[in-house]
Length: 148
Image (cartoon, rainbow, N blue to C red):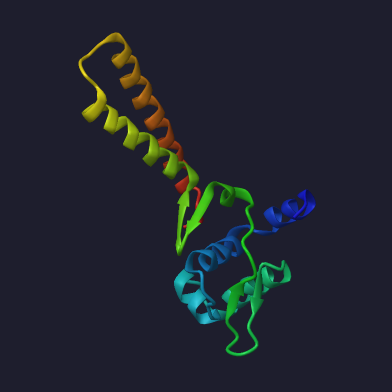
């Protein structure tokens, strides 16, 4: 995908289109118009139909011939999606893994490896706490940018 396509998709994926795309990405399975309408609490199925068709025109979803369910044709990493990793049906901010990794080693150092309070250990304690806090802050900040 070139830069023009990414720019076009970022401009087109706004508001309710973005919420519909996020829902399909999160569910990971084809959904009907009524399922989308109920999940996103749209006022009518025609609203869900309109946004699904917008995504189909953009080439992000396809409509199945039998049953009329919509499914993703592929994932695009645009906007806030660049910062998320999908594991099964779950989406996590990339920083979440950095935070867990860093915090795990920090706690391991504190309770297993640290032997007394020396100047070096004090530096490691402060540095580890600051780095862990930064990663957790970024993970929460990115999580708050999701559509719902």
